[in-house]
Amino acid sequence: MAELLFDGDLSLLRDLTIAVIGYGNQGSVQAKILRENGLNVIVGNVRDEYWGKAESDGFKVYEIREAVRRADAALLLVPDEVAPEVYYSEIDEELRRKSFFILDFASGYNIAYGLIKPAPSADVVMVAPRMFAWGILERHRLGLGYPVLLGVAQNASGRAWDYALALAKGIGAIGLPGGAALKSSFEEEAFLDLLSEHTYIPLLIASIMAYFEVATKIYGASPEAAILELYASGELAEQARAMAEEGLIEQLKHHSRTSQYGQLTRIRRYYDVIREIVESEADEIWSGEFAREFAEEKYSGMILMNRLKEIFGSSDLVKVERKLLKAIKEGKLD
Ligand code: NDP
Image 1 (cartoon, rainbow, N blue to C red):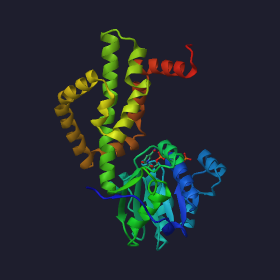
Image 2 (cartoon, rainbow, N blue to C red):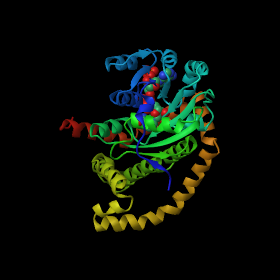
Image 3 (tube, rainbow, N blue to C red):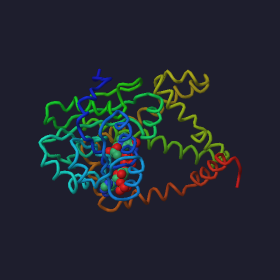
Image 4 (tube, protein in one colour):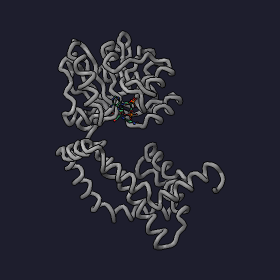
């Protein structure tokens, strides 16, 4: 079994200044929890509305380069696709002047694919939450931790794993019920993360689209009823929660017998086809082919992604969904 760890030593961070770089989804949440845990946190951001938000949340905010200059550790919490640019324009030079520094990432992508090669004097660690930022905050308010994957890419101080664990505790992941840190690597995290983004998540969305098309266009079902059945009721989210808490198959006990029989027998119809797709997607990720594809897309200004958002975002399903969600929220039909 992979090594699971449940606590870290916060005292390792007590005398350090920690710069949270980027005050977005993860940055704003991690900065607040680190501060709540008594650590000395500053924020580095570009001068815009996130800067103002960090200030109104009571943080000292600096230009990114200045924050790194003042810090002993930095959590690089900007989007993965801009992180290399931010690192090389604002951080690298500062890091090369320091004999001790902890550089922390919340995802493995840029290190795994060699897009950031940090100064050798730094400890380079990963504390990658397996959770959206709002989920972290919600659990934190309830006094609960959450799962993270840990990695160490450079261990200049010889204590990088201890620092990674201390940061995991500092951001409220471990040392609390429900929290766990799994020893992993930047490469494993990037691979697993991309593989779910390329397999079961798009498969779920594609299944939802195909179901909607067949049920409403061929069998005349009401589009609103179909969308409620598919995801708007929130039942899907409940099922996902039951999977996380009780197990993939164990959670079936909450469904009727008809449902259980239907689900179990149909898994086998899909499995072989899906298995083949998963293997080919895994090949693309492992070989670096996807990273190259995405680098080209980024270079082109995200033309394909924006076009696909437009196409899918203007589908019949989305048009009905918008009206339905609005009506349910407001308790009236326009
Ligand atoms: P966000 O998109 O919320 O990050 C926004 C922050 O990045 C803002 O402070 C923004 O500043 C800054 N930023 C954006 N572009 C630039 C730029 N060109 N130069 C300088 N700063 C910039 O990111 P997330 O919090 O979603 O992701 C951060 C990291 O956390 C990523 O590595 C991600 O993979 C990881 N992660 C995210 C999860 C999530 O819940 N979203 C879950 C687990 C991991 P401004 O807009 O002011 O320019």
